[in-house]
Length: 104
Image 1: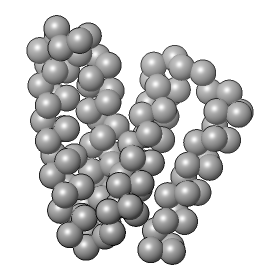
Image 2 (image 1 turned 120 degrees about the vertical axis):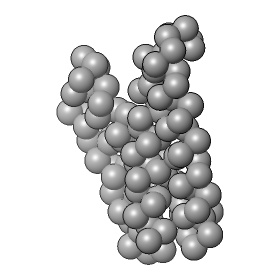
Image 3 (image 1 turned 135 degrees about the horizontal axis):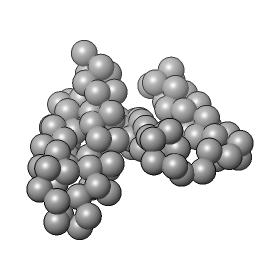
Image 4 (image 1 turned 60 degrees about the horizontal axis):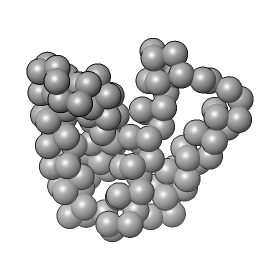
């Protein structure tokens, strides 16, 4: 259960990162609210998962999921560069996250 919550919390990290960008410095109310709610939920999920998963592993997996998810949203929906080197680097992050799970 802890791993499922950790993955969902990592996805919420993607949500709050995108909402933070869209909030325009907290001048837009809806993205600012989405940011706050998803940030609290993401942190709460991370805290829950860390009861059963070592902090180094849990935090690295959480950040990795959030970073890859945010980069993918940027590339797929926000017009950011989707170059092969960039995609390759994201795949390395995914490999690291999978490795941390396997060798936990």
